[in-house]
Image 1 (tube, helix red, strand yellow):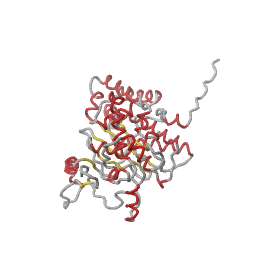
Image 2 (image 1 turned 90 degrees about the horizontal axis):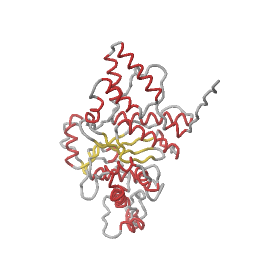
Image 3 (image 1 turned 180 degrees about the vertical axis):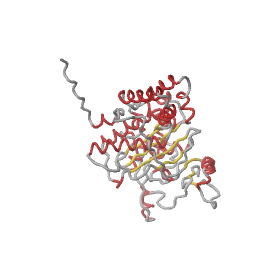
Image 4 (image 1 turned 60 degrees about the horizontal axis):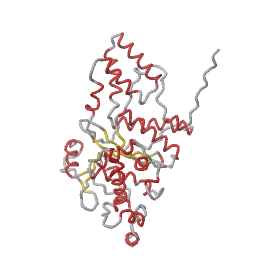
Length: 385
């Protein structure tokens, strides 16, 4: 007589990386239930778009320790593989997170799920769903789809399949699912109930090129500004440190930011992003600190150690946007759109109905040397802290 199989015990961190199991009751009959929020999103499914997204815990308490940050990273990477939304870089902090995301053109991404016979399309769909769901879940779903086919419930079949496809290449679905899945894991680990997050996530549409590079550096410098480390390479839960640790996904994301191929990471990519961070992450000199103090201004947040940065940069390096990125920049989280003047104006015209008749233009210049970055909002209250 065979012995009963012993139940496998998982650690809390392993649970965060588990695939979605079989649900009680019908899978296909459950409504997606995705609600519509009130925040304005500059989402354009007909093209590749990059976004800076962030969200903060309710109350602002530092709830995330090492295990929580690692669990968030694992969930983020699993949803990244499933959704098609690429994480270019990120920073998971004690009470909030920042993500720099690339959302591919939707129709182009979904072509492989729409060609061939019904059986071929279904096979490709199930292969993809295996990135997120367990075998038990997929077996139950497959049984339900077979029943629909036998009973010729074509409309219900298509609605069920489309429900999964709608979650691919969707900024809204990616962010909502990431926050909800992490909330369930966090509440179960800590024996709590109720909402974890303060509100819906914030998002800023970011132009590729200079704006994207600036935003990536700003995100990876978060632990430095917070005083947790002197160098982002020493902070385990940010994209740059993960890339240095050998992660191919993290390297690929930063190479997209830099406009390079992932094969060039070792030869030029790593050094290019390192110098980008060093150039804009340097700490203010003593003279700047004294001047700000004399003017009665609040000293800006700390940066990387000046002597160490200068030693690594050597002579002749221009420190672009250093003052701006030593601050917490509201333009990067509340500006709606960030990029060149033409990029912001184009986004403004495409969503012209969202704004009053008195507004004649969209682009508003950021307070940075050179005047090359623009935002859709002109923030006057606590724009820089």
